[in-house]
Image (cartoon, rainbow, N blue to C red; front, top):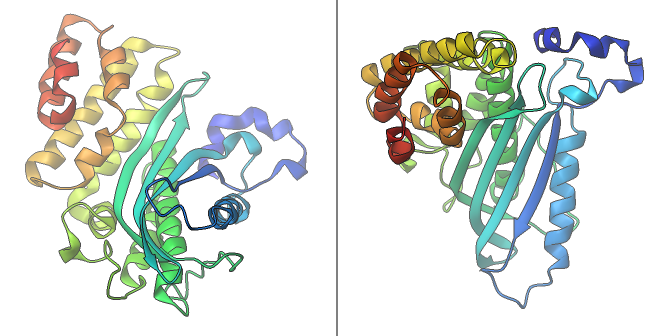
Length: 303
């Protein structure tokens, strides 16, 4: 696959090294719910989700162990609704290695606050992309949500290596949205469920109005992050091009979801890289970042 261009040395590894695409850590926090529930249930669930994510083949491409995408899923349970049904939030983080270094750059850092699901200990943790709803929507909602975000991560990762190569995974995420589990208390899959949810994230990534976002994502990593080791000056210019693309996207699509999502988790990285730039680079970075990433405005003012 095209990502492998950056890992040519892995061709020397034996054939058995071919493996799954995702290397994820799954944690479940349960301190907010009743202490009367046997915590072993959640240990079983954590183990089941970890195996589900890490042992499933999510693409048809060969991956070497060193290519596996590093990510984490933190499931924070906030309410026991009875009948083995829970409400909570899911924090998703993923990172991407910078070429020729040990540094990893944030790829996705997002919190989904609209998760409700049903789990009975030892029930199979399954997902069928051709039958997303499953037999019980509340049971299917957890794995559908995880599969959705894994495809988002794959799409972002692939695009960061080869322009538009992640589109197939964004389309898979959109397919999950269109066939998502549907029940009274399930939310996050519909356009009217809010302005920052699974629906709008996938919609933005598949909408032609946001074509420049894909260019920005590619430019940020391939002409920016991946070049830092060899040529910091060129890398900063590549990242400035990416920020210019994002500025155009933001201007033409006010209050879109995708631009703020891009910057989540990147504030310190951007500050560190541009603080070493020349006066012109610092000024341009400060101008763009102050408009695009208001959350981290105090950081960028130091430029």
